[in-house]
Image (cartoon, rainbow, N blue to C red):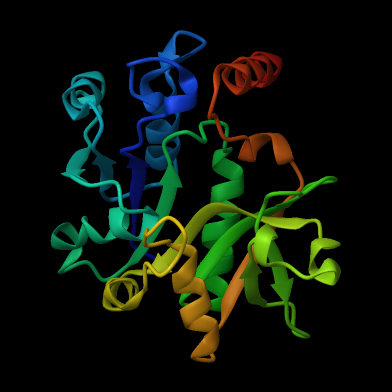
Length: 244
């Protein structure tokens, strides 16, 4: 299976209370995005494409020696819009696209290799990583069908009391078949409170078409830890220090 990786790295990170782009904040002395790039390389990505925006020159300067490509998201119009900006680089690509977040630096190579194995075995249009959270308030819940495939991702605010009891959540890490992904991205809507194009809406579109979507849980919730503020950055440093 040919695999390339898109890393979303365009956000401002306002809650970091710094002018530095969020993905450049140091994690044990290295910009956090370096860990994500290393992981993408370790799983054998043919291409690694960074979607950049806020203070893009700084992100380029910090990663220019890491054999990556860059695509600029001029307007911050959501994760679906960010991935769509990379289309020109993948017009001839026949494989799978892994989408990672530049602010989720603790993912293990082994976990992503398992996600790749599931994608290779089941051959769905998409596979996504999930985890279990004791108190999942605020997170999108994974609803599965009788066969165990993903039937819906329901955001907390839209969830019924019954669905809110589900503690399996979406962590925003996906593998897509390349061609169907870029055919479908222009079809998603920004009819939501933020006026943005959300990547999880692709999953909804696939399921409504009757396509198979696989969800792979990781039991290590720590590796899905996203960094949005300085407290979470410190927590990530503690996790990383404990691994070594």
